[in-house]
Length: 66
Image (cartoon, rainbow, N blue to C red; front, side):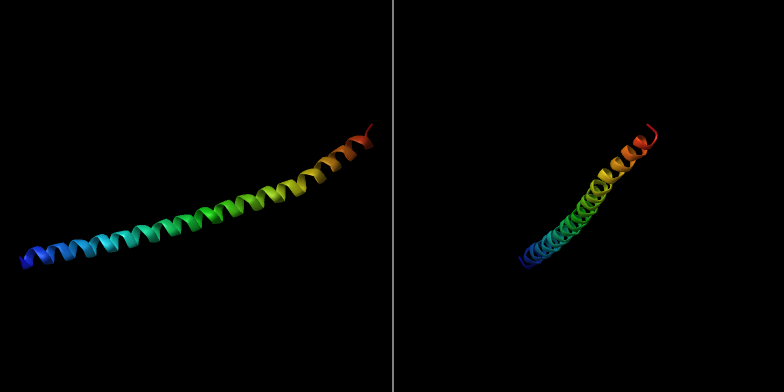
């Protein structure tokens, strides 16, 4: 009887620790994903700011040679 109780409690403790580890891993993954998305968005904004200037410079460059 007591051996059965001890086995169930150890299994419950194991399951609890396992869930905590999984939850922690999901949080880390979510943080990393958010960081990657933020970095990607920053790069897109940087490109969008540079793109019009590059086009205008290129267009001006073409006008000089016409």
